[in-house]
Amino acid sequence: MNRRDDNYYDDRLQDIKLDEITSSERNKDVLQKFHHGDPNLTNLLVDMRREGDSDDESDDEDEIIFTTDYELGTDDLGWLGFDIGRSEHLIKLNLFDLPYHPAELHNEQMDALTRGISRNRSIVGTYN
Image (cartoon, rainbow, N blue to C red; front, side):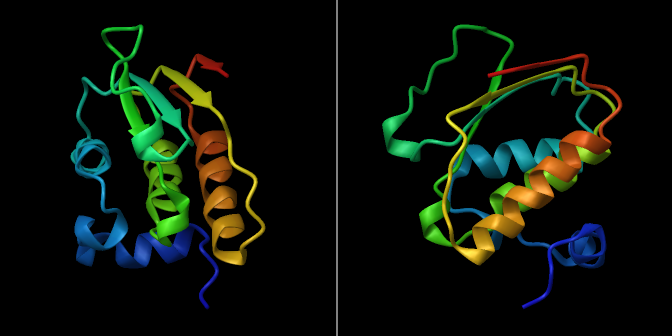
């Protein structure tokens, strides 16, 4: 298995198909906004609960919700981290219910997510 470091995502960026990353339409939309550098994506809630269990509404009307279902074996967390690391517009990041799953793939995705968050220079506040 390839380690999901920055090169892993850089090498696949041009050929990526969002359907292969996540089965969630909402997450596809969020990732697409990141990939296109959407300047309106400034406030993100990352909800790690199973998608069907989370509220579809945020208390903050400007907040975009990204919910992951890591049991499906998708790589949405890794790509989210990659995109967060490259974002110049994201100002507020709200992390909710971070998972703890021992699977190797999941750990690589969480590593990619945390690396991306730590690389980002536009975020002025994180909340959990």
